[in-house]
Amino acid sequence: MKVIVAKSAGFCFGVKRATTMALGAASGNGRIYSLGPIIHSPQMVAKLEEKGVRVIDRVDQAGEQGAVIVRSHGVTVGEMERIADRGLGIIDATCPFVKKAQKYAELLDAEGYTLVLVGEREHPEVKGIVSYARRGQVHVVADPEEARKIPAAERIGMVAQTTQSYENLQRIAAICLDKCAELRVFKTICDATAVRQNEAREIAGKVDVMLVIGGYNSANTTRLATICRDIAPRTHHIETAAQIDRHWFTGAETVGVTAGASTPHWIIEEVLQKVASIDLYDGK
Image (cartoon, rainbow, N blue to C red; front, top):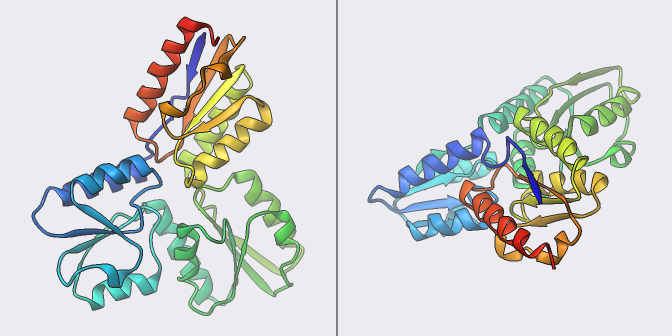
């Protein structure tokens, strides 16, 4: 089988930065906590735990001393304040693109706009961005159908979860334009997200089977899988090489491989090695 691997597969800038900061912190002597998983890769989180980085769900689960790593997706304003109030160190690994979305949300809120945030309501990045709109006039919408339910407002300001698709943002912006006298939109989608999605579309159109590698809890990986599946029905979202079924490749001549922004390089390599070994059996 011919294998086509996406050039952009794997860690994006923000994730690489966060994991580097976490590994650097783990090499010290103090107690290190991660408020939520540092990135959406269970395998990477497990490696960091082996090095002493303990994942906590709430600030009050941290000890009296040490430092807290703020994950790449960011945290809420209240959580940042609670870390500081407890006298713990802060290692802020929030992705710079997420920081930008937080600042724009804060700006729009301060200037009196009703904020529309395009994203997934329960995603930690979205919860963090919402907290910067202190007046509380925020609508989180995932798709055009939800956008149509937004009440009219004089002025609407819009930001997006960094891993959203540009097309979804465009569609929702067009709907909101009819609901207000003024619409101000900040395009806070990370360039790396758009590159990965475009690359995935191109590869999926050329292959018989598509593999999308990354955590099941990763929004950007799940979106890549959805995009690919719409084009190539034989798309499989996997976390590790161990989940591959060689029967997926029966009759396949070409295989495409891409990975989410939180997927470590070593996992991609293991998948490629497994695919190469399956080729010996011709998928049977």
